[in-house]
Length: 608
Image (cartoon, rainbow, N blue to C red):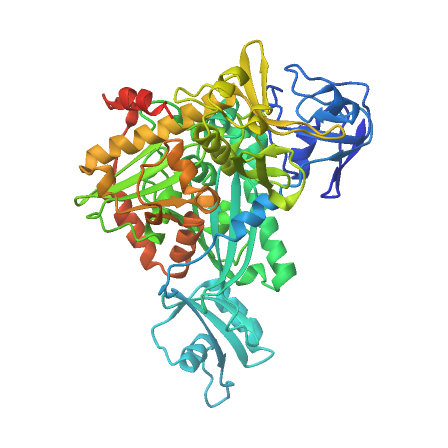
């Protein structure tokens, strides 16, 4: 028996089998819901509000819902069964996408050098005295004798010339790949795609003018099967053929939806998209290519491919022109992917003589360090703390997420995404909150949240002490006390430990790489932080909690979406694809697990 479920605010309806979960229905409907624990109910991040439907059931095995939330219709999407027609309200993740849209920019002075060109030509009519072939007349109109033709293009030309003599020819490297009636000489587009574990960004560029025509950013639909790469690899390993295809097709289908949105919004026809460049971490790139990523989960973590992979876009399932080409950029190692190599060319990190640090902080912390003519890279298992997944009140950077915290004698001041009442805290807010708690002395150097009694002795302002709550000897700090049934937003002692584990892994990785290239903290000329973290975190907070070396704040820079920008550069100028391939092979990968000093560096970095 079928039941109808309508997801709001997306206003998407779908008929599903009775008895399935809300999360399963969301996957089928293409609706983004955090499925961080792959449907076990342990993380509690998939809370949704059942506006109409069966509320007599409430499966909450790990106590993630408050009594107030239950009364207001909140349920866990991964455990709530659809037994009748339902209306389900989900968290609106558009704010996360909007943040990503703002981070795309190309380096100053970059010039497109496309391999494609489109020519609008008038072909002379054939006559009895000059019965020239169609291909010869096209060559003469172009003034080029040595060009060749794809057979599909020649078929199109034959059809067009029966009706008219004006047409547009598309050429790639001296070969005609397409023909259109009329003037379409400026309609030449390409896609640059940054496949993040959490967020995917699709950009459409005019290959002739180098103009960014549109951007679509959305939550990676694979997140319904787990928040990080390991959980998705584990999902694939349960059924290597079927589950791999589920992950791959979910992503491809959503990217193709972006293509159709570009067509609707900007008049960009899919048949005028001729090039596609894809970057992502090694797991995301492998799944995109339709390859089993299982070997990335066990030592020695060897990738299937390091050099870039290319082929027809249609072979990957991307909606584009018949002869569109797709290129997946080069990886460095099993857990240092093409998103990092793309970021390196964006930030011009190809000069290895200066001491420079490039870091992309997420569920994995990918780090590249240069200096003394060397370049080394590593990946650290930071875990999902900085993405909000393992934090009690953590969430993505959606509306209502606390993104900045300031503590003072007057208490807690905060800023939320969307400037609405807080419902949780996102990655940049976690940085700020822990940094501020350390600064004012509420969290000591060991990472312990001190009790109210101890804070009184330290003369911490009463307005801050009042935010402490202690249960069975363990203290939490309340960032926001909910009103009228709203949920409190707080930092727990367990959250602090999660942050310590994550930041220690990254800080230890940085220390190991500094030794590998032979530079000291004072010799670091520049720190470049990629992604949303680099744009939204405060350098002071990152330094205070010990995740970054303590250097002059003016030498710490945001690279925005360096991966997306690098993908765009490779799309607009194939020369940069060659640079990426060469640079990736020049960078030495360091496997931290085999480094004898890593555990000592890790334990030292645990302290604030």
